[in-house]
Image (cartoon, rainbow, N blue to C red; front, side, top):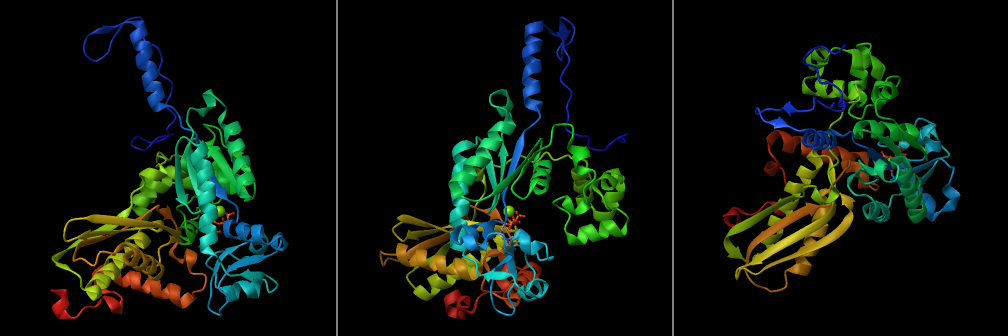
Length: 432
Ligand code: DCP
Ligand code: MG
């Protein structure tokens, strides 16, 4: 039984027809046809959703296998080759040895000394990611690109016309045929259950969870299968004797709230198969931008460059705080005569300052061609997807990753403006 005040599952019963003539709120009597239309509108509004979640299998590894067939079926690690490098991605064969993403390469090679190591190629992965996006965009009425290799599709209502499982299966085949990459999907009534279903279907599979079966599907799974349960939360729950999603769903919501605050409530909902979050269309996702009008129009290159560095570092930090990567950079310049020009560049997905700075400076050098005083400059990152900051640090070591972590911790604590690249520190007279 669900105690009063607890959130309940989103399985609304169909509205029952009332008596032949009913007074709704106003004392006016409505006839049958009016009530029927009213009912239909409400039912459509509350209708259960059908959400498909797609995730490419072993994405980086699969791209490498496309280029080199001899790598198939082998323990393969993607990452830097230096002593202090980390694993970005690993094949299923490598995972059997306990290797996982973000593990130091040295540890991985100790676990599996005969593993093959390939350095990553973010440009190629981004290209393939965009290829898959194009196939989905061409077919799906509403889709969200949630990470470099992951998509949510809202295909509610599709059943009436094609059958959602059939349609999704066809789309999966089309993606695999056109990109050459294996992909799995989960189909369910919300994002959470569809994502967990994809995970269960992997590798190279598909799984449909029918409406009403969400809780029983999740129940036997270990708590770590719930996406918001990381290693730390998982360990915390296990220490308290909570090992399966079923046990988690039975913990009183007030207790979970006492343990974890707001997150406890969110977790309880997830354990009970409830997730009302919408699929956010890719083209409506917010970009991150900043711009600055100079106190006096300027042609001082050192000042302009320093400002570009400052702005780029500011919004790259914002990107990392939101756990996002950008796939497109736009630069805006307004000259002193108010002519405004912009230029954008599609880039491999990243959130690293040094990569983004290079792109922004490149755009500036191409765009700034009038040798006129500049009134304003602006930088914008768009095509945002969820992603870890270490995703493209193939050649970088654990020290580089630790440095990014330390920089972001300091920025978090004292404010982003207190830690910047040396090039951005201007002499006091220029700061004015
Ligand atoms: N990635 C990374 N660093 C991480 C996690 C992931 O660089 N800590 C990269 C490599 C992956 C890609 O992102 O290939 C996609 O991440 P997934 O979590 O979807 O992992 P895979 O696609 O590799 O495997 P799976 O089949 O489990 O989806
Ligand atoms: Mg994947």
